[in-house]
Length: 193
Image (cartoon, rainbow, N blue to C red; front, side, top):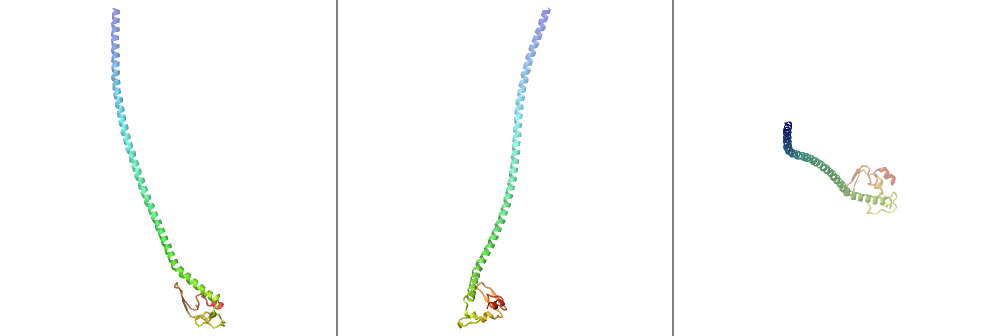
């Protein structure tokens, strides 16, 4: 009896243990399956969120890059406009300087040749007076003066009331006491002769 009771208890315990083991195994399998499904769904959800965040971050970065590029382009356009203004001002200054230099060159060309001609002419006249010793200008002219000679020594020695001398460059000299274009002051002229 004890033995059969013991066998029954052992059989009940053994069947309960087997049942519990089977139940535990089935529960474990169900939980593993549920966890696998949950893990897979969590992985998929995590991947979806990560992809959405990456797309959002990429869009945000693209917008920031576009904004930075827009600002950089606006700054470049502004700098280019300022540079173009400075170039235009510089070119205008160069054009003004060039025009001024051209005007000066034109005036120099206009006046240089006549002035140089007048200077050479006056130099030749002075050389005639000083170096060649023209008899008409001498104080004690011993030779007769040629009839075609228009000026005498008296003309250069005596101060004239006014003299108007016009050269090829258009200079007019009208002064009291001016008898020659070579000597402005009467005293120098008198001392020379």
